[in-house]
Image (cartoon, rainbow over all chains, first blue to last red; front, side, top):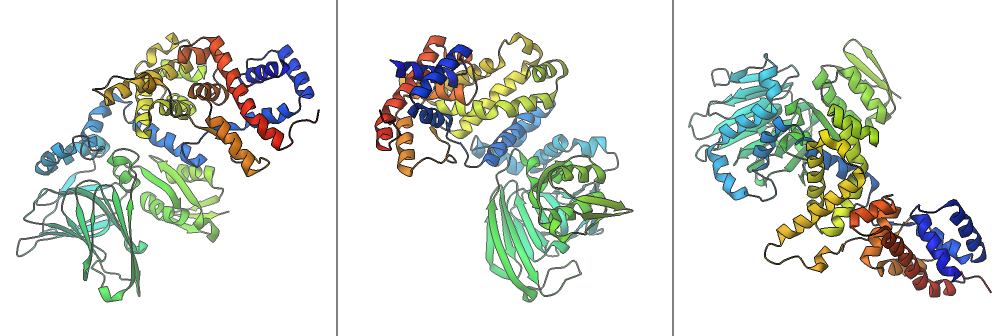
Length: 371
Length: 187
């Protein structure tokens, strides 16, 4: 039957297995049976159901899995991946490792940093480890390389640039306390008898576990805590009934609206807080710790996901030690994605220009952005 | 693609490897999904396959057809995965059937009416899985008859026949619908 022949030819066309003569024949047949033209058009639109409902998410899927894969491509990084994956990787052997983790927090954290942070310790000779004591309580970083400190109890703190911490020796000796302004990553030695407390902004973070990152820059008006491992309890100073317990890969953001700008590095008086908004998000880490945007700075990478341009520039200012001025305010709302590794400010700007059109002008230490 | 492979093999070029990965990941992932049900398993399987490919990068030129190689590797890895997760019960024939292909009409295409769209969707869903898989591999993944035949371990003739059968079944299911919508020419 002609219909069957037509269908067969259509099939061959779809399979791109059709000769020139057959195509001619197909054209003829379609003329005599026009309803099949409709059928043919219909077939063209058949596709497989999308796994993700968004074309952009397909790219994310590929990118996320690539990240996972690429960390295994260099064999010398393989040991690191094996060690770091255990504590929270998909319930595999989670229980077994938790005990070892608690006892050996310092040991594992050193390994983590030794592996992931080798650029900090072995390559960069300027980065020494500083011991912190109550005799020298205030520590500060102003340059762009994160600095490592060891507290008297053995806990390790990495301070990001333009940050400071103050270690307080507790007179009654029952607590371990630090005050933080800026951003730091903590790896705390577990000691149930002496709770470790970080005061950042108007937030108190009590450590019930091990490693977490806190971001509390004064001029940003918010405090972000990202937990990498263990458990922490976050409380709003002056509101003991408002507390949250974070488990790994949760990020708590606390927005603070204050009546006036507080210049000292102290806790913000509770009665000056107008509104405090909370949001607990679950983070989807693309891969192991170091790749969460919140702690990417540990590896000297600047990672940003769907970040507003004006937020990003604050980080760029810190990283490159420049001031960035928006000549065109509408640029501030643009959202950007990207990763910076070892670029200088010029390269970074050029990279950003590839996704968002803008012009820049560098005069001394200041960068001017315009359309 | 041949260029990429050359660079991977001779220069250990990770960027080239990444490009290859980006070209093929989604298709291989969907292929793995047709065997497995869980997305994470499919992701793992595909990554494993690529990792092994990287480990063999210095002998890549030995592979005649990278598409076939990768699809077959994914198929085998998927079946292995299934076998492992059901340690006690042996794999049944039913397990080996690719179960999870889903086809549909591109939603952005305007069809005459919603009912017509639904009817077409129904007709597509009624197709046997194997038909759907071959249709997808050929049309969407752009594999040739020969490649599909190698991957699924069937003959080229079978591929041809299956494709024909798929279309035939569709046309038969849709004939009454066309009549209803006056799409058939007045004879």
